Image: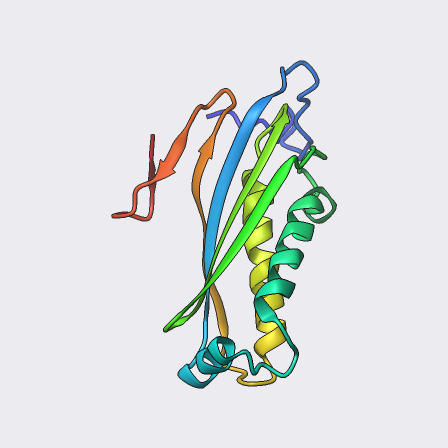
Amino acid sequence: MTFTHLDDAGHARMVDVTEKTPTVRSATAAGTVLAPPPVVAALRDGTVPKGDVLAVARIAGIAGAKRTAELLPLAHVIGVHGATVDLTVTDDGVEITATVRTADRTGVEMEALTAVSVAGLATVDMLKGLDKSIVLTDIRLLAKSGGKSGDWYRDPASAGGSR
């Protein structure tokens, strides 16, 4: 197997995508913030002392998607042309889903994963004063479309994916 992020000597390198044609690409990721019932109640009642948790997390997630290349050393700087971050309060905490879109030379999987991660971290930050046991977990890619490798969707019945 050839790894494109390694040169002939085995050193890490940024893949050159100069010759690739920009195409429309999309990726969706998800994650979960697990919180105990009193924290979920505060979220539902709007009584979290730090304010509107979901609004802050949504904006943080979008900002995270836009700054992915600053955080991941081999990620390309790409145009994030669309980003949505949805947060849903559940009985177990908060479910986070992010979809990122571009018309560029490389995919936006890392941007979607970063959006979920940063939105989750913002949620934890807003809630940690209520309970230190809150957990950010299960960050995963759900789907991607576009590019040379085509479409991919996670098989909900397994930890792997399917095409």
